[in-house]
Amino acid sequence: MAKWGTSSWWRHAYRKEHQQLVAECEAFCLGRFAEHTIEASDVVPVWAWTNLLAHGTAAQLRSEETACAYRRGSSQDWRGARAYLVTELLEAVERGVPLEDLQTQVLQPLELDLCGQRSVEWWTTGRWVTTVRTALGAYEHSRRH
Image (cartoon, rainbow, N blue to C red):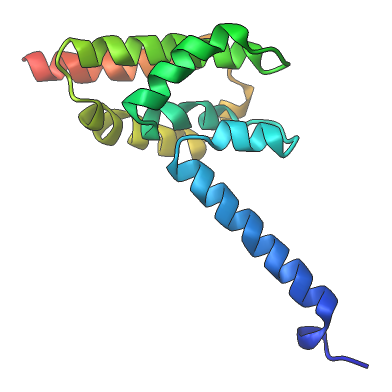
């Protein structure tokens, strides 16, 4: 009889678990955590809708803004809300606010803050949009003054 630590079942489960973790980390860093979660047939946490805003490239954001109208599914309202915020974010960039500054100074800290709040899971799209817009607006206001 094989020991627990050397059984092929355990090694397979261990590798699979690590592969999933690596895939989740990669999706998070690339701003695609919501899509990764949907592909895994899981419920997307509210904070995850902030992930593309916080980590996506300008090209990814423009693509999301354009593609949103053609998507279907139960998460359409969240995708629509995110596309609205993508438009707001890109407009701020057009006004001269560097995308990297908005991401590192506002959106990444906000994403982590939302991730740590259990109550966020019951938020509506409206509350999430208002929270993100408020954070972006406050940052832009502080840059002007």
